[in-house]
Image (cartoon, rainbow, N blue to C red; front, side, top):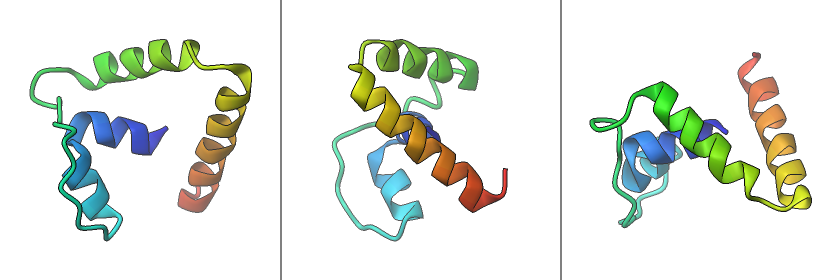
Length: 71
């Protein structure tokens, strides 16, 4: 979920740059217009529309991210 959050807050180019990828993404950042809480709420709504399998995959990815960071 942290990548989805960063993509929404910072935009695609900055998020990918954090991962060492140089890419001209068309996704703008919304960090100047939305609070962190608003971004999390929007992502929660979007994820609520996903099929069960996609939510399971995303949950596994989020758990792997947290373990990698030591959360």
